[in-house]
Each structure stands twice: as structure tokens, then as C-alpha cells.
Length: 482
Image (cartoon, rainbow, N blue to C red; front, side):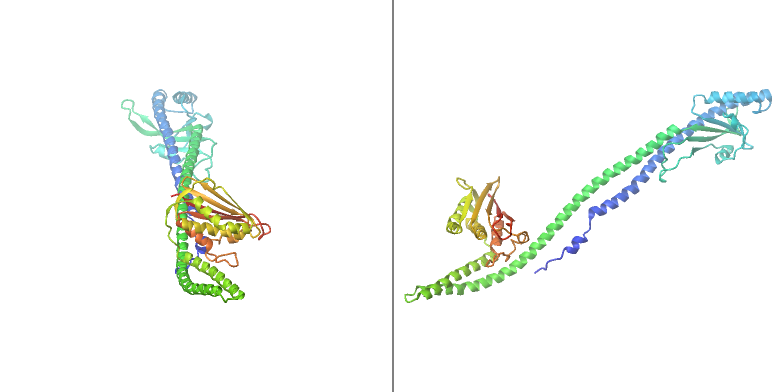
């Protein structure tokens, strides 16, 4: 016999797939989505910066050409040297620069000398003549290379590379100023450095909004993926749990079946050994009671022995029915005939106990394939339990509901009812609330009904106070038609 397993610990420590997946996938999605969003937003930022840098370089090339052709060359020819501190040359330079950058989104143009980081010209006159610290961009331009950098005082959002909306954003570009061969167009040495500053506040604000959109969209998509996966895993866990529950039920049924098989073998052997001497006792008592010279006392004692041996024989029969359940002999029969046969047989007992019976069987033909003998015994057992529950009389209602492919029979009594703690054990073998009961009757009923591919269940309410006439018990039997 397989010993029953203790599932208490496994139930408490069982691996929770949904809970684990929720935490694991949440962190994985965060780890994946944020870098992904940052890469996309950074690429958008780089593209924007590159486009405006190219814009500045193009403008710088044009400015280099205009300044050299329309200012440097004529000034050298006329004055012999360039002196931007002189008003005429300064105004001349300012006119050329402003005409060149007119209608372009340029905030400021500075021209640096190469010897020292001194601003020789600026569209902002206040900066002319100021010496500034040579930046890396300036130094690269002196060597003939251009460079750009963003001027921004904004803080980043939680260190994620996303800036807060607001604040000025400007792009500073350093471009070398070279002399140009008027015949070939080739560029020569670096004679100065252009510094172009573009205001990108509006464009950058759109970029930041786009970054927010990317982050929000990625969070939304990852959230939808997370919810979808969570639902899938939750469904999978439900299936796993259902399979585990079925396995536990099968193990329980196997343990129960093994115990009943061993018990059945013992009961069958004992019942067989009891039945033979019991028959001899009964027949001997009947012979003694029927002898002509038997006294009244002897006849009374003989009757008691016969009655008790019959009761004991019924108990032995119940044990044998439980230990060796019969296979149904299916044939066409009528449910209303089986029930009416029971009620007719029990009518003397019903009258004796002052019990009224109500049913909805009149004129109905309830055909089904079943074993009428086994069903008769099952219903007889249920009716007897109902009668025994109504010690002070009452009523019993038999209702048959016909469905598409089955019948549902309900048998309701107005007896004392069954306590809830006993109701859960009512189908257990040898469990009985009666002092003289074997506890096998309702178990035999269930075996017979389940042998017909049906089911039986019980609802009950205890009277107030418990043990007295109260709400009663209702037994439901579901039987397939074919």
C-alpha cells in the first residue's frame, strides 16, 4: 500500500512561476528598453548636431570666400594691410559678414587672430578686442581642422542622457579661415578662425520631446509585451497547477483504492465466513419456533433470533456489495418506474412514520440505459436515509429534471439535516452519524451512480437548534440517458 503523501510543505514552498517571471521579466525589460531608447535618442541627437554642423560648415565656406574675395584682397590692394580697428575697414568687414549671414539662423560670428586668441571682428561689437582662453575647438581650427560643440546648461534627467525641456541650446562651430587662390580656388595657410554660433533652442526642444516620446513608446511597448507574457505564463501556471492537482487527486484516489482493495478482501473473507453459520442459526431458530411443542417464550425468542440474524445478514450483504461492487447490466428501462417501485415498497413505512411524498412523475416517460436492479438499490438506500432522518414525520419531495442528454433527480427531506463538518465526510466508507449504521450505504450509492457514468452530491442545512426538525437534506443524482 502506498502511504499518503504530506503535501503541506510542498504547497507552502511551491515555486510560483508567475511571481518569479513578473520580477525577472520586469528587470530584463528595463535593462533592455532603457539602453535601446537611449541609443535611438542619441542617434537622433547626433543626426541633428551633424546636420547643423554641416550647415555651419557650408556657411563658413561661403563666409571664407566672401571675406577673402570682397574684403581681404581689396583691402590689401588699397591699404597694403588689414587693420580692423580702423572704422572704415571694420564697417566694410561688418557689411560683408552681415550680408553673407543674412536670413541664416546665426546668432554670432567671431573672427579670431591666429597668433593670439583675440577677437578681431564680431557681430557683437562689445566682444571686439577681447582675448579669450583658447579652447580645444579653437586650437584645432588653427591647425586647419573644424570642430563643433553644444553650449548647454541643462541638467540631465536622472543621468539617463535625456535633458529637461527648457534653457538655451547653442551650437558653436570653429572653422579655419584660409586664403584662396583667385585663379585655382585652392586654399592656403590659416589666417584666422571663424567662430559661428547657432541658436538651436527650438530645434533642441523638439529633439528632447522626441526623446521623451521614444522613452514613453518603448516603456509602453515593453509594458504591453510584459502584460502579454505575464498572461501567457499565468495561463501556463494555471495549466501546470491543474496538472499537479490532477496528479495529487490521482495519487489520493490510488491510495484510497489500494486501501479499499485491501479492506475489501478482508471484508469479503470475513463476510463469507459469517454468512454460512448465520444461515444455519436463522434456519435453526425458524425450526425451533415452528415446533408443535414450542412454548410462547420459545417462539418469541426464536422470532428475535430470526429477526436479528436477518438484520445481520443485511449488514453482511452491504459489506459484500461494498467490497465487490457489481458491474452494471445496461438495458433500456424507465426511471419513473424504478422510483415508483421504491415508493410502493416503502409506502407502509412512510405511512407508519407519517411522511408525505410529493413528486413530478405522473404521466412522464423517462427512458434511459441503465441497470434497473442497481438503480433500485441506490434509490432505496437514499429513501431509507430520508425516512430515518424524519423521526417525527414530515414530507419528502422527489423531483426529476430532464436535460438534453441526462436526468437530474433531487430527493429532499425535511429531517434534521447534516452538519457541515460531517457533510464533507459523508461519502467516506464506514462514516456514519447513526448509532447502528455501517457507514456503507451512501458509499454504495455513489459507486452505483458512478458506475453509470453519473454523479451524486448532497446539500444540507441543520435545523435550529441542531438535531431537531429543520431545513433538511437534498440529494442530487445525475444520470446520463444513454
